[in-house]
Image (cartoon, rainbow, N blue to C red):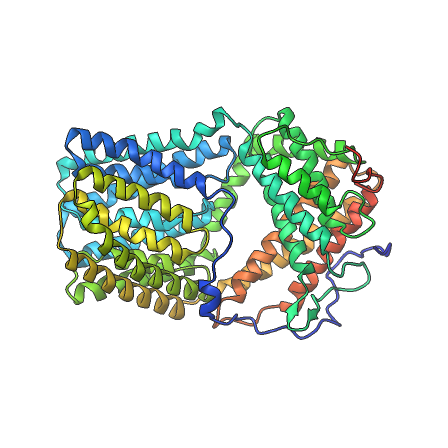
Length: 595
């Protein structure tokens, strides 16, 4: 790595190559390609099965399986928060349960007061838009707003009386409380499980970056050179490592008071961070095999590995403690609330997506109603699932949702005779498809939809048998119309604020880079301040990449500052490398054989 100092200010863009067009191609092949399964796919799958089985079997024993629709609304809350540390998960899941109950309450009250399909569709579309914005603003993560919209939209078109609503909401809250317990139960046997997985991912991403860092020096802006027709993976590896390390720090900061295990995890993240900010032969601890070995042991059930001492680690851990104290203080909580309000404010880039969701869901519902579908809630859910952050993602989801649902109705037709053997068979079929949906959806959304569709159709059987042909025909029509309406909404209602988000992210990255350079060059700066500035720069680079990816998939917007974005990214990574070099995190680490 060059010793040339990094000068403050905006990076030069004079020698950057011409970049490809901003809007990415709408490729069916990439949309339907299968990915490796998530490393934690079984956790939400098992959680939702346990959280659903107990209420379902209890209602079956009481002879009131017709009420399972309301308990299922609470049970589905067990799908959320599996990437969060348990302290944060407890608060997030409580909010999910209350949000689920609030949306259901609005739907039940509306259904009891009016039978007008037009009014019900309007309320369903409005709820879908609100749920989309709130899930995106709070960043609750998968499965996101679709579960809330599924529950609230289905309840809108179910017969309801005002006097029944308290009991139905009590069932939802009771099942939600049980789902809360199920999701937090693993903390009894493995308290730091989420943190260990987050750190293991950071180590694995750092190992990939250390094995193939790509061009990385202080004298030139790395444009990501092409090798034949493929882009050099080095810059992509550094971005992935930065995102994984940032996620690991966030997880550790949210995990509560430090424990010996968390201390070891923090030391491992220091090593992973050093590997990605200064990759190359000079980074002694950035040995890919060592990092992978640490990741495997961290992910396992044994003791967390203890990395060799590295200069600066004690200062880094002191900085983490100081940052954790700030976040947990009253002013830190106020700052988090202010950040949430900014994401919901008038200038938020989420608002065009909310309008897109409102328009798409309303259009899908009214089209289905005009064609004679009595309960067009599935069209509303389909359109809501298609309203993604940009047109490219919406196109991908349209293909995935349509293919998965059409295959799913075939699966439903095959399994329906089995489910009608008896109530217990119906419950077992629902539980099986609930598990299969979560097991498959991390491979690709369309594959998970193949299991979601029969499960959603079987839920209707709790209230009594329906003609199979009617169910299948309505579902196919709802799917096609919902997908068409959702994609039309994504096409017509563009997110022009996506480019503005990129501009704000660029400014934030410039400020963070200047602060990191200033504190890194100041011998009087406290070590905790230097480390916090470096983590802030990493977070700004992650946000910049996310904003750029979102804007690159949108269309009908002003030209993106692509060259400035690329230059800012490269300069930010050079600054991280320069500050790490001055700090010397791993220059004298032992070789791979030493433990």
